[in-house]
Image (tube, rainbow, N blue to C red):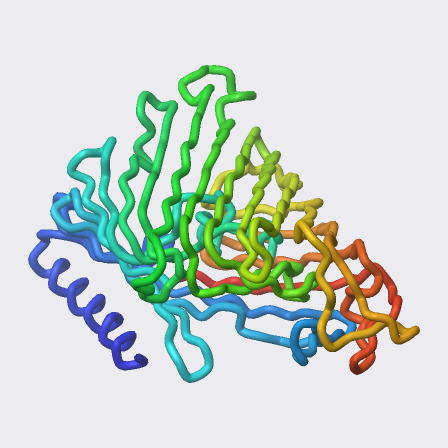
Length: 411
């Protein structure tokens, strides 16, 4: 893989020299490296993203596995790829993530934009659903995405989508609807049905002269899958991955729907989202597991810059409140565990509420520093990171604090 990246860099340098000599195009650095033909019909942009994180948390143990959680440094993301345009109308992107000694494919898609109101995207890309999942990692206001985006929203998948994202109809309406494997980056199993997802965005005041409401966006989205035969486990978890509910095998129908709103005004932003998912359970007929989540985010730039997606400077405070709750529709016995009295543990529903406060410092477009403090409030004191003592689940502290820090480099 390293030879591929070396080749991309050498190719960029070579093409930059060539265009400079022929004066038929340009190359350089504009928030990132680029090569561009004279008429901008052809554009090539190699890029990289590095997230180096620090997590300071009390040691904890999972309930659904023997994994432990503790304070650590980690390289959260190491992404390399390229994107660009061909013949003005065709966009493309390829992005990979390096994990230990392997490479994970994140994106590999082609977008045909001959009809701006009905563009066609084919390949592996994010399904049109939650705005926070669709948001590139380099633009996140918080170090980790919300619980409902992480647990309930689909992300990268293989499929096809018709859309007009980036080209709102009448400066008012955007849409995207697609058909996907429904297995993330895995190839579709022949025994299952496809997954269908769609999203609409509305900008009710985009053409208005009123700056107070101009940058408001309201969206709705839904997902349907008729037959999931793989028996996939649910994993209701916090932002750092603690599973606060037993894993439930699902089979059959899956329905998800949600809505979000975004409002930007000067240095201030407000974002809110709600998602609900219903999944058929395998072991009990006519029973569903219901999971719903929401979050409310506020940010404010103390240094006075206007809030945009592509921040190039500023010092920002951020706050979030969120909740994820689940209901299994019938009681579940935790296999392999008892309480302190030796009795079986039975649960039907549980929830976690998380408060986050953070500071973001945008040194420039390419470098960002972030720090977050999170406080989890668990709805069941038997299911917390400090509850487990061997095969016994004991009543424990129902709160957990976490300090997170990140340095981001994008180039």
